[in-house]
Image (tube, rainbow, N blue to C red):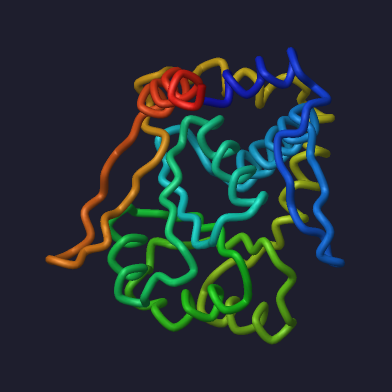
Length: 218
């Protein structure tokens, strides 16, 4: 998937890849080249934190541009994302983050940080929380007290950018090492008839859908 995005960014660098609402509620666009650059910085920051090929990284967030950036960065390192929306219950997160053995987890906001703190005993494997939105100092202190390393998403990007300046091309080499059969995502079912079940999707699963999508649209 990241290889495909890289090619699109090369061929159509100025075409809009994302639209999002800014603080005033106005839509802003992000080009493919800017999106790919951000993904490289996030991936670099994750490498610095210790994320490696084969890891499972949680994402507790609703749909937003940072979600896509984080997801593609995770995949670019040969790791797999484990996504869940903000409406996930404590019981679901306890099971999913523990079963998937996630050591790192992206969370959308302070409410999700507090949710992770409340289920700390059930997710001892989770060491680091990366927060998309800014959180209050009290949340930072509470997370630290619970044994989490809490990092702002913007800091991961900035650190990743600096690391790329030190070792140019390293993140790209990790992307090049990936293959279509690598696990890209583990999606858990709703669990209405029992415990949620993890469905493993490889990069080829997503690429096949993208190959067929243009024909369905036209």
